[in-house]
Image (cartoon, rainbow, N blue to C red):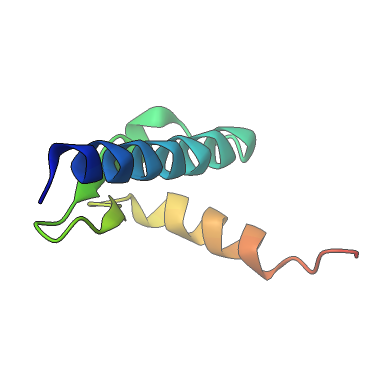
Length: 72
């Protein structure tokens, strides 16, 4: 993989991880509950976000927020 590809994928993954962290913060979930969220780049250049272990109570709160219907 070219360094340029890795950098672009890392930027994409980092921005996605930051977006998720920001959403968790808006929900009032303490950073200690989601501190394992991190960007990952695969050896083929795929951009991913590794969630790691998240406390069960935080997952319940996240799931509840995802179930809330949005108005369009």
